[in-house]
Image (cartoon, rainbow, N blue to C red):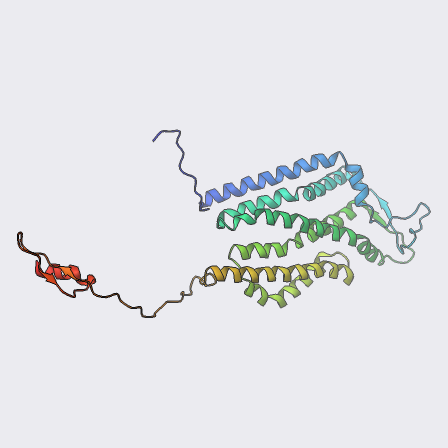
Length: 316
């Protein structure tokens, strides 16, 4: 074998631990490079992005009064010498994470897909096509809820006190809400991935519905900075709906898989069904016994074919 020849590529997805770690490193590097590239592009539009993100802020008018339709306002301030540079980094990082969603979602799927069957890998484009709008939908939902969240938080300001809101503090809240809402909308898609990979069944997911509804509600209450039920329900309600949609898809997928393979739903410890029915045996067949040279073979009538070898051994 020549030195230039390479071993055949493993097509069944089996890799050693070292190969898995190298694959994970490569996927992470590609994702980070995509985020950094989007950050560099976003740096040229930092002023427009910062102005867009600050729209939900309840800033006071020049006379110190709130805007029409707003009960509370705050004096927006930048505190510290390095804060403007930190604000630029945060805005660019947030824009890079959101803009590079298709890249790092695809890298996450590409890391998992080698362990799937060939007919299951075709869902890559579907996963990417659904994952991107789901994440952006969560980000949009969070951005629309930011004014309500800030107004509720500002309502706790003591009477007669002027609220001074550092922009850095506001961006921390906005960034957390945008990313948490976006990732939360990906949770049902993760369940669908696990069902396609054969890890979770639709029946098991449906049996978890009470715990899932409670867990999603608690997560929404913790993830939203404000204590109002509107923000909590605005995050929990879409995830509830998406969860039950994922359960419905999993049940249909399991039913389709059951039609193709009746043993697909069995666990590793469960034995498949054994067919113990008796089948009819074909009729007997005549086998010619061996004879010395020159003599005519002696026919052995009605000797079953399955015992032909035994008859030959007895005669010889």
